[in-house]
Image 1: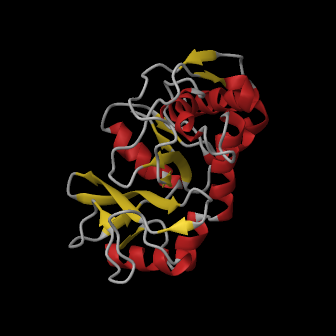
Image 2: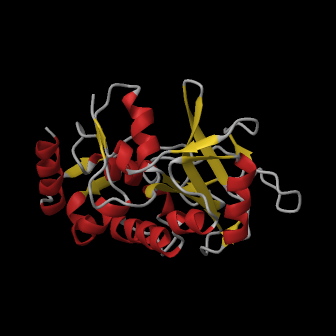
Length: 250
């Protein structure tokens, strides 16, 4: 069974069709009405644990060995973020053909039933279209390339490992936050998934100004080291090992 899944995933890496998908869902907020960027990354094993609860088949390809990108989102201080901007818009997968190999490693679709471009299509239509006024992320190719660059330049996998936060163990929220603050010198946002009684480390968000300098994520206060998080401050947080959840198929 697993061999079949890897054949499918390998085929996806090599093959990119030319699909033009209309985005739709026009936003009431103009695309230039945003204050900062949220760069969100999730831990593949945690993602697979969470989607398996919805009976989705989740497979982590063998060349995915790090935290991967969830999205790069133009955001507002008030939390009501723009979506599906500058309608009508399209997603043309041929525009990102040069990035497919990198995207499958850094920004992969892990849900087996979905065509492998669906995740990129969703992120571009919902969020990428709202960055059209910023020359760094204007257009599909620039948007996805910037996401790849941010992922590679500020490796969460390396940051956590350097702070002795290693997969397969439990850590306190304050420990994780301290390691992230030491690395970035700004406050970030740590998100968890609750798997019955277990609190699982799932997602970390880093915030940037429009010129891509780091900044505190809204709602966090650097001086007092307070953070936004849905993780429990009273329970240890589990950081699941990668190989244990590489095949999460029900």
